[in-house]
Image (cartoon, rainbow, N blue to C red; front, side, top):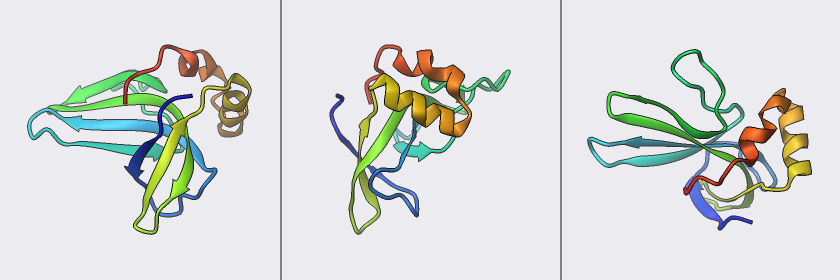
Length: 114
């Protein structure tokens, strides 16, 4: 499995929750943030869901899909420790529950460094 990563979580994230990890980075100011979302990021045109890989760049802001991750720990300050889901059966259940069964191959493609 992939190394765990601490990110700022959104309200309501709990241990065991899973989602699509998205990295949003800004080349102008060097900022970077991660979000665990219910839906995968999409390309600018034709709005194709991309669970892993470069989605778009606009106004020096880049959006990358980093796969499907699960919350391992939740801190009181809202940060969560997450780890990538790499098990094919677990990924299939996650994708099927969200209506994205067709994205399995893209989720299993080579790991993108977080």
